[in-house]
Length: 146
Length: 64
Image (cartoon, rainbow over all chains, first blue to last red; front, side, top):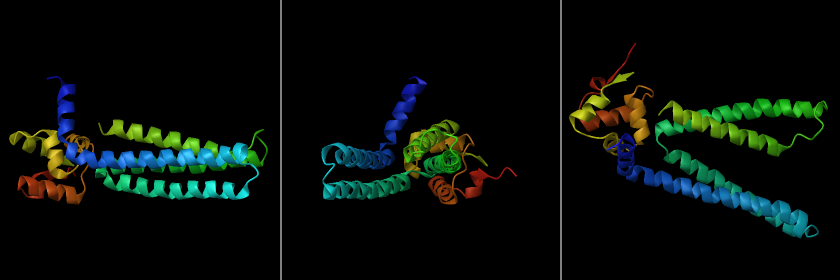
């Protein structure tokens, strides 16, 4: 049996523990997908489909907000379901993402305020930076404890 | 922190997955503890001690 086969076999034996994590991860993925879809609907729907209907704009944003609250709780459940090493990896990644987001976001905003960049400092740029930094932090953490 | 998890596990002919399942953690965590890359929490260390029916200090040893 190769090392890879042995690892796969051992992973299967851990199914009891990992099934709960898989369930929580799936739940988080569903909530996050729903949040992204409702955000797209709220944005593009309000701009392109119902630009004149104010109440529909409000309702679409409220739906997106409510689903966003669901994402927060799904993420909390996901983190609580992880074991202590995985929680540490997530915490380290979140610490890096928060730090980078805060420092880079503030500098980026300053660049905009003092007109050193020709475009507006959009919040979406910050969200993307935090997302990429967080993912990178998780990958590095996983490699560190392999 | 040094530990004897790998030896104790081998004596019982357990895989990392067996131990992970018994302690309700991931195999990655067992692997990291055995390699000394990660120190377990006190509750997890006590859980391991109960599982192996040994005093905690016979499994985990402070390196300082």
